Length: 456
Ligand code: NAP
Image 1 (cartoon, rainbow, N blue to C red):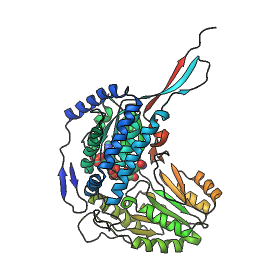
Image 2: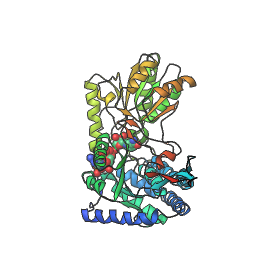
Image 3: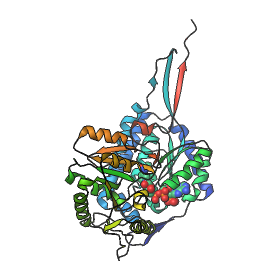
Image 4: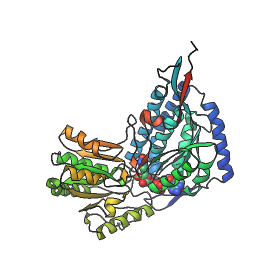
């Protein structure tokens, strides 16, 4: 498994995948660790989780460089990601016990309550785009709930995958409470089917999600899926246009456009579309892309050359289908997996720029006749992850928000994940929730305990 620096194209490390015997041994060791970990008091789990946060903060510079080298994230974004992971550790250290405390329910029993027991070994299949954040937002709640974690990370970020196990060990977690498995995607199936693996979560593309969910379903194991998106940002005629354009540009370029909740479709009502498009293109043209370790770069390369080529193909086909290319759209003549910020206008349903998820810095501008048309266009997608609405009218914003088929709707701002709020999607963006109290309850046995009343 090779780590290839997408800026230089050079192979920076090669990792030997773990063989089947080693994988089996690690799963068994994880299950053994679970039996001690599940009875470890919350206060001790919280102490260790805070320590993991402290290790992350102490190692933030080195970890940001690792991400820049393995998948091209610019350093300032890498530092912010590590800070967010540390905050997530602290959040669950503080709140997990309360989120999972017994809930007494008045019934005809002498006493009845709901308890939340851990399930055991949970497998996490994770993507490269936020190589630390995606993992910590699974691991912090799962370990605090008393589960143990197995990580199968994306094959191009093995260095990050191993660093995460090291962080938990350095923080003092017992061995095998968190284990990285270096295996390719094609070898996930036997891990899901392993009798000691109780559940699986996958963050990644919709095809990978369908495959993992199918295998988990055939074993009757719980799954959570955080998949792709084609988030719609609706700009209504009473919007603050300057604010809307800035937010729409920023959201499309988060992580070089390689974010599940990056805005992808900009649905603008007719009276504003000409001015919105003019300002949008102007701002896109100013974006500097280059070496992710150069502080002058706003954006690095795409994570892999094959992914960059896929983006280019989607753009070219969209143009062939009638979209107007306003800027970008050509692979730059330089080494590395670079793709320029690209704007497509006149995008309509049936074009790839409307129907697909484009996982890179490509904006699709779509015209709507009015509010109802904008909502219909937003919902005309197989995905349902995030969405945003720009309007000066708060009541109108709430009314529109409730009609959008998505896991979150943000008003007059960018869609983002916040550890205090549930995160996830509907339709082909997946199911289940991460973060907040909802996230920690995904991988627990919600158990009824009932003390029968003494006979009268
Ligand atoms: P990906 O190709 O689906 O890979 C994600 C993970 O799944 C990797 O570890 C990959 O392993 C593994 N995998 C791929 N195919 C598999 C299969 N058939 N069975 C089991 N495992 C499989 O996605 P990606 O390119 O890394 O990430 C980009 C996608 O993730 C985008 O669609 C994005 O929207 C989505 N995403 C969603 C969220 C969310 O919260 N909803 C967050 C971030 C990203 P290998 O690397 O070994 O192939």
